[in-house]
Amino acid sequence: MDAHVAQLQMQYRNYILSLYQQGFLDDQFTELKSLQDDGSPDFVAEVLSLFFDDCVKLVGNMARALDQIGTVDFCQVGANVHQLKGSSSSVGAKRVKGLCINFKELCEAKNYEGCVRCLQQVDIEYKTLKAKLQDMFNLEKQIVQAGGIVPQVDIN
Amino acid sequence: YSSMARDGGVSCLRSSETMRVGIGGMESPPLDLDEVHVLAVDDSLVDRIVIERLLRITSCKVTAVDSGWRALEFLGLDNEKASAELDRLKVDLIITDYCMPGMTGYELLKKIKESSSFRQVPVVIMSSENVLTRIDRCLEEGAEDFLLKPVKLADVKRLRSYLTRDVKLSNANKRKLPEDSVPVNTSLPPPPSPFTISPVSSDSSPPLTISPESSDSSPPLSPLEISSSPLSSPIDDEDDDVLTSSPESSSAPEESPARRQKMRSPLD
Image (cartoon, rainbow over all chains, first blue to last red; front, side, top):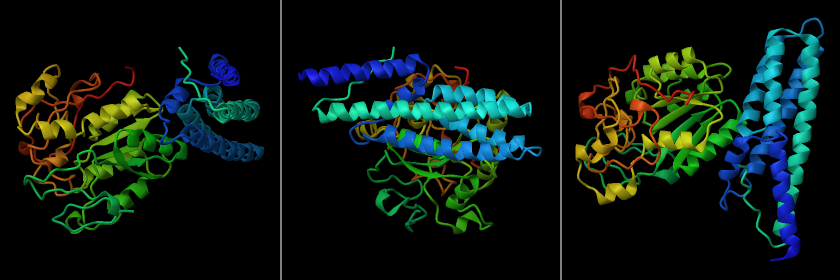
């Protein structure tokens, strides 16, 4: 076996494990990966891409809603948080989901500053995740290009 | 979306998905029993893609729509036309998110259960929130099951198990014997549901497939075609899947309301 491929595979394994260990991903991500196969090799990438599109849209909505200083519609913000919580949960974006849970409470409490801060965190968090997953996909590509197979990583 | 064929009330789902089916309660030629058609309703695109994938993996045909209104539109329930006039779509299962803007999954459930064409189609509710009152309400309204999001393959497989007509077993086991499925049933108490389903159906196929009343059901299968398939997954859902009760013909589809079935507790 090519040493280069083996090294890449190890790198990949470690990277994935770290994403789980650091709480970026949870078992729903594992679930999504298990739904991917040779017939649908880009399933995970596709779903995540849609998720990040969602993030952009929803964060934008929330930012606009929170911009209406004095007349912030917290229900509206909450509705967007609910949606983001849902999709982050569906893809295994653990940290984003966790933030959304807090965010929801802040909306219910109509805590303006809290909401603004939380939104900033959400923004950072999804972008961070996006970058991390991009690195992961790049590693996959490198492995394949080097003639190897992307290893299944056993999280447990 | 679908092209509807006009052969005795049995409709094709889409032009590419014709089923060779019989008419009424007659014995039908070999059926592609894997062509279960599921209508999935969710306002979240991410969730639609995921549920679609989950369903496809379990050999279902899927139509995914983004709202209750679109679902009704798809089913032809968005106008007041009498269902008898409409070509019936073949829908074996409807799975819907609970929280949706406009029409909630609960409201959609009610409308489906109020319709004569589709009230027998099992409706499953999905929700990210484990709220017992919500679950109860859905059950009371006739929901078949309640899934906690994020939905996993195991959840969908379980749903599939009460729709499935296992091709292999069906071909191998042409005898309709209640005993065939009894071993599978015995561990479960009979459900209190008015929709009793023949034990011969693999796990619990929806009443709509068997009742002579419903012309909107998925291709009525001759009892010979329906066989029990071994339960691949443990039934943690009590009565839901396999029913020991009386032959389905005895259950009048009209007795729709207050269909109580115990469901999987999301706490499992």
